[in-house]
Length: 73
Image (cartoon, helix red, strand yellow):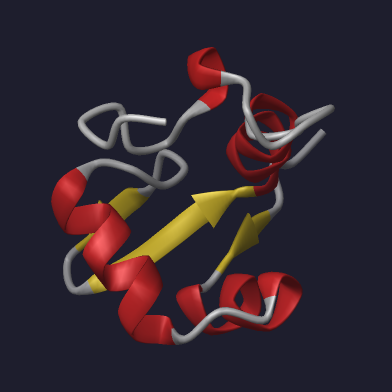
């Protein structure tokens, strides 16, 4: 079965995030895994879904799920 890939524009629309946020996350390593082929960025749907599952939370005070570990809760 062929893998499905999303462009940054498609992921931006899926998550209602600005493209600049995804760009910053790629730079800092905070977002989902991605592939870069030449100048093209692609996110595998599998990596996106894995990231979505990883950031899923039950409450707002759970430090082990903190995307920004340097910020004290």
